[in-house]
Image (cartoon, rainbow, N blue to C red; front, side):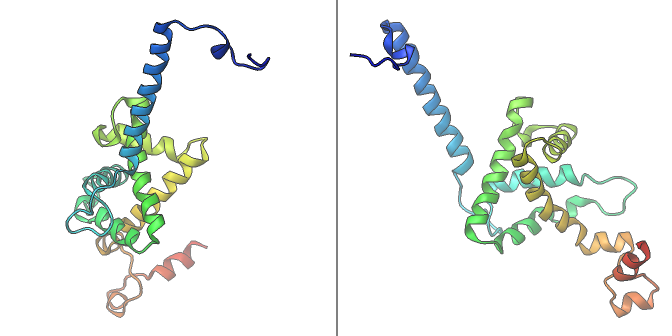
Length: 195
């Protein structure tokens, strides 16, 4: 006997065709969920010369870094020579192992998230589309996307702005005596002048 609260799906007789459709849909959901789990958590071995990331994750990191700092003809420093992804790998290697796994998962999720809007993963987008995705995540109404954007951008920004070439091109010195002899302003003096 059925209870008065039995869902309609279970209370009405089903044909073999409708049962097969439901089973097919359930199977597709299981396969899709399995693929998504593997895509997000199917970590490969650490790539040669790296400390944390596998080849796939490092490829995503390279594209994100390039989209954030594509370089310009006017700027003396071209970011592709700065080894920003290698810096991020070294930075993340100093974090707790569970945080490393979260960062790896974030890179994979970020790459797949572009599928919903562009029909392609992030690494397969052109530069303008990559920059749109970065902008959308940074300015999203979703707290998770904004947190993901900040988590990705923090070490990439640090890898760029703490690079000696960038600091030299920007005329920033950390107060080294040799820099002071050349008349370069120190970082501290530049910050106090802004007040």
